[in-house]
Image (cartoon, rainbow, N blue to C red):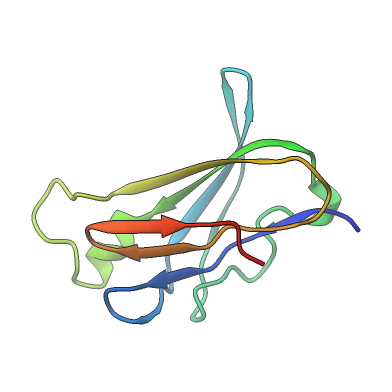
Length: 117
């Protein structure tokens, strides 16, 4: 099986998928951080394509940066500036060629993540 990466963003404050949330993927190589791609979530809170497709998969350390602040502003949940959560970085390793799913459960004042399926 070839490896690949997906995500799903759920707005736990509103109880719905987080549509229109921008996500950046970086590959971490020592002290360097290389941008791989930027995607946005669809109406189901998922990206229309794999964040890291099988043909580009490499084992290593990666970082997803979720642009939570822009999403919270757009949905009227932002509150006063500066926001408590603006950019949410999640750094993780992919050690084997398999499906990695990194969901984000988001609200204006907290988030959680895990390795999903």
